[in-house]
Amino acid sequence: MNPFQPQAAGLPSGSFGARRGAAFRVQPLRRLLAAPHRLAFAVGGVLLLASALWWALAQVAPALGLPLPWLLDPALAQAWLLGVAVWPLFLVGLLWDALPRWLGCPPLAARLLAVPLALVAGGAGLAVPGFHVSTPLAALGLAAVAVGLALLAGLVGLTVLEHRSAPGHVHALPALLALAVLALGTWAGALALALGQGLALQLALQAALWLGLVPLAVALARPDGASLTPSGSRQGVLQRLPWLWLGTAAGLTLLHPDVPAQPALLMGCLGTLVMGRATAVSLRQAGRPPRIGHAVWFSACAAQGAVLAALLAPSVAPLQAGGGLALLAAQFWLGAVALWAWHLRPSLLRLPAGGH
Image (cartoon, rainbow, N blue to C red; front, side, top):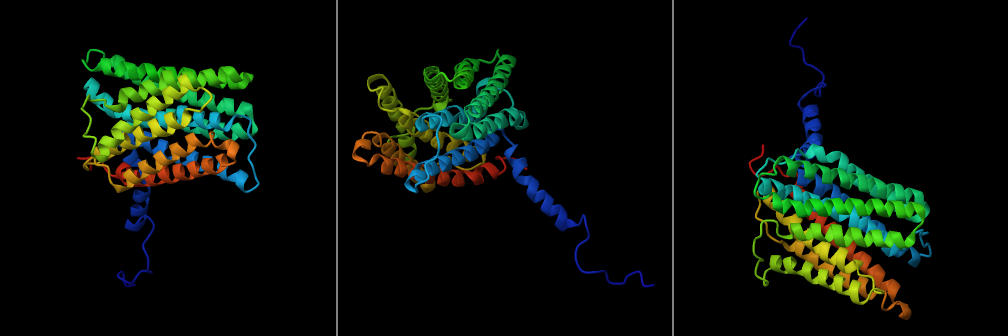
């Protein structure tokens, strides 16, 4: 027998081709786990896109003659989803990017965030159908979100406690307190929803937003105390718009409580802040210059249009144009977050500067 007889065509099992395919499947997960902010941004991006798609479907369904059932006021449901589930994930990513500089400590292993992030995302996934068909399911979802936020606050607290002698630990304390208040407000909302207490549910949301989410966002808007970029630049505009929308939301809440302030706060203030800050952090960590490109700028502009349409929709509702404006706002918002998330994706999947 000739020991060198030809073999059948193709690569054997365990060959380079198979190994390369397995490595290709593992690479994205390994790169997301390269830094804690990557995992938080990735989960937050998926949840943000899913929430925008859900809201767009909720607005277009009545136009198709298929209105969705609601057990909770739609604006209140969207505010709970964005305020305690979506934006906190991005802010937690920004916080874990800032903590090593504040405390002089190594970054946290991203895998430690997996369970808390999964609880927040999974809780949101339970709450959304619960808003339509089952109050206990919605309450269970909010409770899971609260547990996830509490675990995240616990991780931050342990890190701050371990490095309490660092001079920068005073910068981390306001963010830690705000995250803890956000978790408590979410838990109170879950309890109020389970007990059918509408007023308590409203109060819990206001406490979670104004005493938890807003202070957390303010603490992370400029974590290094850098001065604002000149107002004529794109980055300068995105740095100033959140404060404009925050003032608008506060004014509406105090002076015109009958006008919903959530679009200005959750879409205008938080949306613009997260787009600017998360883009800069992701680009910097990926070894690219933190600039506001055309895609991010267009996404931010579309988001501003969505906020304006959402704010005007209740005012023109008596003229039977409110539904059209609400649908327009949902479409603009979906387009804005989809384009921004797609633009952010390569930076999250690129190895950090100096990584291998």
